[in-house]
Length: 201
Image (cartoon, rainbow, N blue to C red):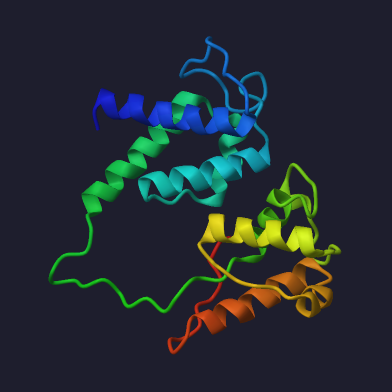
């Protein structure tokens, strides 16, 4: 990777952060600026949103343990981590002619932790840390919150679903919503075997 790559990654990350905060960033930002306290003051939900944008832009995956550590990470460390993952991806390379892509059976169902993140992003259960949401926490879905939740589901996981009034009335907890999504994504898989939820999500 080159210095130009580092600058481009930094610009992308700062652009995402600026859009999330909806305000100009201070000119004193440097690679040593912390992402969390005493720096950009990002919180858990912002780290999740930032991760989604980075994964989409660069086609990489960032594990939950790494995301959890962003509160103690500097901008420079984040950019270096992204750069390293891009380099690893380039070394591995894409599928060759002799190794065709594995057959896809449709989208993967969001894991329980993903569901909590979606509920937090949708402000159905307002919290700065989705991990604080209990598995049996109450969920109330009305016409407005359903629309916002489905929007986040599509944006974060590329899954398009519909939830009618009767189905929404039956979804009264985080666990019930998780089970509903697993069943619906299984139906979307069509003739293929239903995919399990994302491991580690």
